[in-house]
Length: 138
Image (cartoon, rainbow, N blue to C red; front, side, top):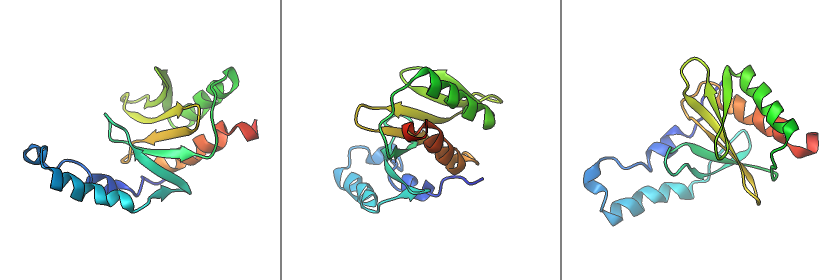
């Protein structure tokens, strides 16, 4: 069980305080961190969630939701003490406190997983989701 190792990479990009929110040079300095490519368990980190700031990892396939794979998603969620909340896309939330630990997006060109960096089992969950939702393994 491991948390994500990309915490410092994420923190280096966040606004340190509101006073620099209009400071273009400070923004450009923070974005230089993105040139250092990151990955976890072999999955490339492709960005951060716009509103949540969670790191986003690309899966190596396109995902289309079906009855079968949503049931599999719910089984994986249960293994991690979570339930699935279906909004625009599925979110895995801890049963104990409703904290969101993951979200899976199904774009027409790629599938992505957003993960809470501080979640103790984040890397394990990423690998499990990637394996379980892979259309080639169905």
